Image (cartoon, rainbow, N blue to C red; front, top):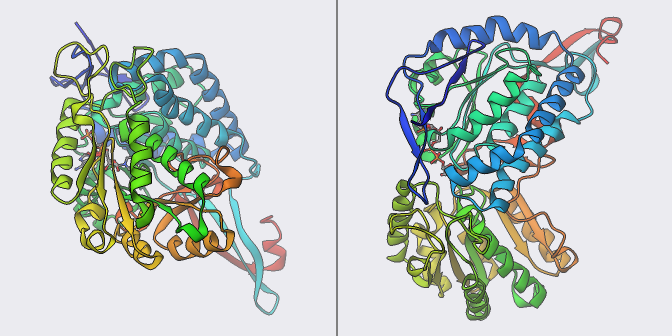
Length: 514
Ligand code: NAP
């Protein structure tokens, strides 16, 4: 008999009363836990958060709430091994990939716990400005008068949780978390440990493991919604009548067809080319390519196409795919058999627009019993002609959320820029080159359609933080089809959970707001 995960609403752990969804190990096929939120009193959960939790959290200063987050970090660190075990079983990730989610989440939470903030209950925005005779304006930020609903994607059940929860709680805003059903187990385990340790006020973070039905209906003006997931779901959410009717502030983090660009020969060298190939292989294989920031398009000068392809092929041959419990395995499986089916359908679609250069569908998987696992080897596609590649919107606009990437030749930089911009707005572009002026100019050209421009020059090939790694110090999010959202970025993350107001007054009154 497997466990059924409880939900945490109105300060209590409660079971759903439905049959629920059974989560299975995508490698071994064994049943893990059941997820169910049927028949919970969702309206009461939101009201409890608004009426009971909000005033309590709000009565503390930023520093006091930061201390609560520090205590939560300690609880999570003490239970780390359990989380890795869940990730292996539920997400089929090798230990280093699980660490990106688990340790990445704890690191992000700790970063916010250590953020040096005021001991007051508001934040300042800019300087005092004179607007009349002895009359002044000062902008301040106060925590929103509502709750935050945070809906997460399956690929980061830990990091996706803490990168949203940390700035919200620090801002004094209660959070209602809805993890993706398929990986809700890890989110549940972490929140159970933290809430049972009573390091946060009861109900500060609510947890609904199961269907999203009925959640968005509960949002009221002054609540906020933070969503991470596919563009398709984001469109459904944005067109939900209550989102419009209640004027809900939304932050959406969605699909992204990220790219990596190797500058032409006059602006790059072999060190840059090798660094690009290493990073492409890493991005294709880490978490089996199930990262919103993963490199999906690799743009290289046409005269370097064959060289780049052969270097990447030789590295992909060394990737051992299989059971994440086996020592020699470097890449585990996809999150589920359903996800594998989506990825294979996506690959079939892309194959009608590009050549297959490395076919992971032929891979032999290590230590995988039975033929029906979620393992899938990396798949490299290629478009060797720039003029044709420019017109292939399928490659520029289709996100296949797995170990899949396309190498695209370009004839000149203008053409490369046009192709990158055909992604319609992305989370990340990374640039590889050794000419500082060209790197700077390219960064400026591409910045307005990316949340992050990640530059790798020979000075930092072994020290850069990685194309796909999201650092809490930097903003995360991208324009256009990437959702138009913005998260993290140190203190900037708090703005989403605050209302900005201008206080206009005589100088003697304004003095108080320091
Ligand atoms: P998804 O299918 O869109 O689901 C995301 C979340 O939305 C899940 O919690 C899901 O719950 C919930 N959901 C589904 N339908 C909903 C509805 N009508 N109303 C409210 N919530 C609803 O995405 P996914 O498959 O979990 O994640 C993969 C996608 O996320 C990829 O496209 C990836 O690019 C994107 N992603 C983006 C970022 C970023 O920061 N930009 C980060 C990570 C992932 P259920 O699981 O219960 O259906």
